[in-house]
Length: 329
Image 1 (tube, rainbow, N blue to C red):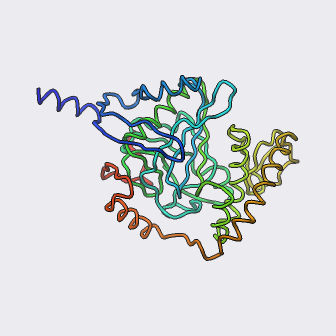
Image 2: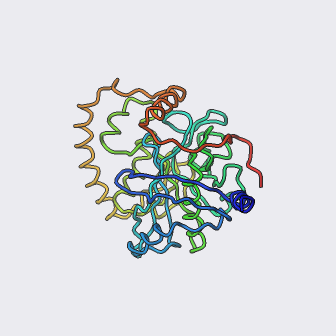
Image 3: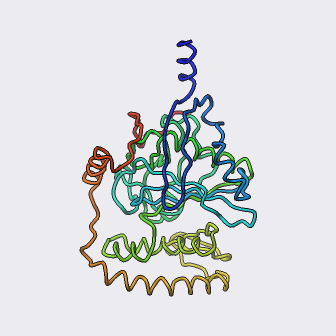
């Protein structure tokens, strides 16, 4: 009997992880499970039931959002009206570097920006349980001559430039992506932000050297908040542009005439007017020296202290690290 149990454990993963309430979205607790085939492992029954209640197919398109400072990854899925609804949130187990974009190979920075994940970027044979490449560098990154490779979302709860999840979480995230591809989605968008781009957060971080870049990201963030649909993303004049429907785009070249639909521009103008009022109020509250970016070493030391004090979730870890070395095929 003991041999049989050991064999079953050897074929899969036995895990227990409670993913609690995050930003108002409750993620179901993962039960103790034996995973015989991690690539084909289905979404939990409770998640499938949740999707049915929302009238969302398990194979409908997905989109993902990452927030570094809040250490959260969100999964959004399209409903029957092609509006995306938040269906799951997962704690990010580890990310490296500081707030701000990745610029070069070896800087240990986790990327920020708008990326696209196609089926060929999924790695079912990852050394880090399961993984997918987020697509860094993209057109924007290349316009600035940025370098880096094998920037992943993966399991193993350890990172040197990637976004690392617990094995239990990445098992579900991988299943969401797999099912959407099988439903016909050609690629899904992953939006990586330094933090939730509220007026309060933008005001608090406005003295950062990265603030102009974050303002550019915020335009895409806002379009999603307004429409609940992933924005169409292009790059011109070395900046992101969103929801423009015509023209030829060159990452470093001049932008074509703005072709954003007028109804969307009007909705954005109304949204931005409210934001500017809130930003002015928040700027009066936050002084230029009220926030300073924390070095990675100090941030992780504080996280370890919080875990010892029971103020932060503890994850099962493995010794794997994300690096510039390609994972085995």
